[in-house]
Image (cartoon, rainbow, N blue to C red):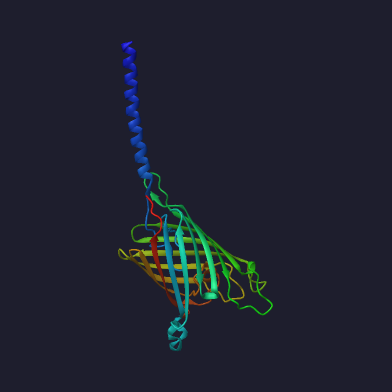
Length: 292
């Protein structure tokens, strides 16, 4: 009986030691596999387009985007500053991964709404993930009354849809790169030769030059542009300035529109011929819902 009791005590002590070892191993694996890479980009916008970044749960972000006229419009237009287009937008993060947003642009009196979901996040450690992946989908409605009398478009005919897969990698503290394969669908086009569906590839980068300042660039190649417009590929360069709750972006671009269907599929300015719009993005984040 004493030998049997001693045997059970040894088994219990051994199991307890093994359990402690297993817990330590699992804790170490969990720690190693959850070394998330933060700050791939400063904010939710690269320049014109979206970045892979999403806000933390409970954050409401207010965005003001502004684009002036073309710099080569001359002194009479004060080099584009007499012309002004603006967009207001609100983004709310329901979770750390999911964001919903609405916005309104003065250009073509466009309303837009979009959903953004962070599917994968770059990680280091024992189970690394080399890339971040965020999915983006938007719908826009153009409400400007520029149609001929008796030829008013229907609600459906005013709609345009955009889908993107945003893939990014932070290569170190100073360099981040993003690819943005994109699909744009127009419910209505001007001529039968114009495609309803467009396929666009975007590439963007951020080079950090100080703790709060970085240089950004982006380019979108349109594989099958609208035939009725002399469409040019969208180009933008800018400076990011991060000031705590604010992110301030100074931008030069050939696109006047600040929604995807506009700057991706309808930009007509030639950046390298001087058709450059100066603009800026300002964002302010508010903690609406506290999280643990």
